[in-house]
Amino acid sequence: MFDLMVRNATLPDGRVGVDVAVQGERIAAVEPHAVLAQAAAGREIDAGGLLLSPPFVDAHFHMDATMSLGRPRLNQSGTLLEGIAIWGELKPDLTREAIVERALAYCDQAVARGLLAIRSHVDTSDPRMVAVEAMLEVRRRVAPYLDLQLVAFPQQGVLAVPAVRPATARAGARSRRGRGRWHSALRAHDGRGQRVGAAVVRDGCATRLAGRHALRRVR
Image 1 (cartoon, helix red, strand yellow):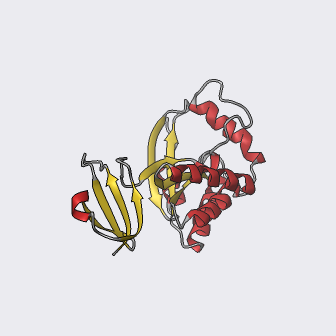
Image 2: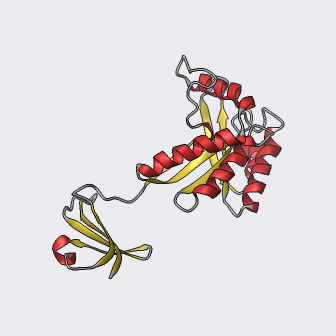
Image 3: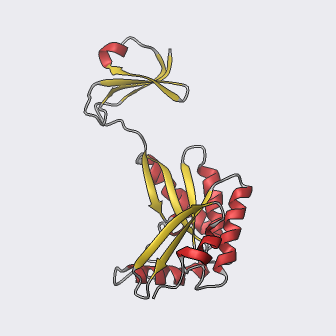
C-alpha cells in the first residue's frame, strides 16, 4: 500500500493518463493507469489530466522588497537606476515586521503556484540589519515547505559605503549561527549603472574578495 497516489496525470515528457505512487518522501512508481489501477494508497488525488511536474525554482529574487510597489513612490522612468533610488528612499522606513509579513505573503503565493525553491538576494547595506534579520526569520518559518536560500547583496557597494562591508560580514555570521547557508553577491558597475562584473561566493569570503578583485574601481 502506497502513502499517496496521484492518478490520471500528464507528465512534462508528454505522457498522459499516468499514475504516480509515493511512499514516504519518495516517488515509488510512475506507470500508466492500467498498471496501477488496483494499487491501494492512503490518499488519492485525481489530477484530471493536468500537468504534474517537479517544483519550479526561482534562482534570482529580492524578497526583502517584494510587494512594495508604490512605496514610497512609483518608478516613473521604469529604469533600474530609479528603482534602486526608490529602494534607498524606502529603506529608512523599513521594519522587520513589515518585511516578514510581505515576504510570507509572497511565499504563500509562490508555493500555491508550484514554486518550492527560491534564491533571494537580501540588501546588507543597512547597518540596522533590518532586512537581514527579517529574512532569516522568514527562512526559518518557511523551512518545512519551501527551500529558501539567502544571498548577501550589498546594494550600495562594499567600497562606496564604509558601513556596508562590516554589515555584510555580520549577515554571514548571523546566518551561520542559525545553521543556514549564506552566499554573497558582488557586482561592479560603471558610473552609468552598467554592470561590468559579478560573482557569487559562499559563506563570508565576500568582503575579502570585494577588497581584492570583484569591486575594484572601474575606469
